[in-house]
Each structure stands twice: as structure tokens, then as C-alpha cells.
Image 1: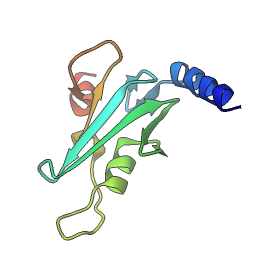
Image 2: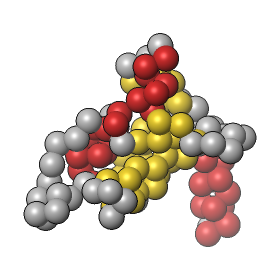
Image 3: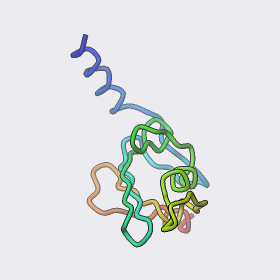
Image 4: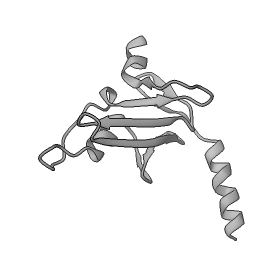
Length: 106
């Protein structure tokens, strides 16, 4: 059974719906990263089956993810515009791109 579960997980990783918000479409499997508080907090995730997944938790929007993850210097939660923080690395590309820049191009 463990091998079967691993195989199923690998299949799930290869196929899935793209994530999209405000006209920006990110292919399934693309990598995501966010830096907050001048680099003191760094988060990495992946766009999987129409969601942004970070540390095993799924988010529909960039802002929901950013606001849930980030902690202020005072140690409290905050409300963030995720477009300003998240970057994406598309499959088969080397460079990271700011999602805000992609939205601005539309």
C-alpha cells in the first residue's frame, strides 16, 4: 500500500487545475515564495490544483495566504495584500516573477 500511495501522490502532482485570480493564471505545479518583515519570515509553497499550498494548507487567494502566514514584529496577525508579497516560478523557468507585475501587465 505505501508504494501505491506514493504513486497516487506523484500522479496528483503532475496533473491539476491552474490557479487564477484577477486574470492572472498560474499553471499547476508552479512554485511560490513570499518574504515578509524584511526577510525575517520566508515562506515557500506551490500552486496545486487551483490553490496556493503552503505548509500543507490550501489558500484560494494570495492575500489569504499572506495574511494567515505573516506575523508582525509585535507578534500578531496582520492583513496583507498578497499581490505585493508573493512571487512565482513557472515550470521550466529559472527566474522568479512578482505576481503583482504579472497582474499589472494585464
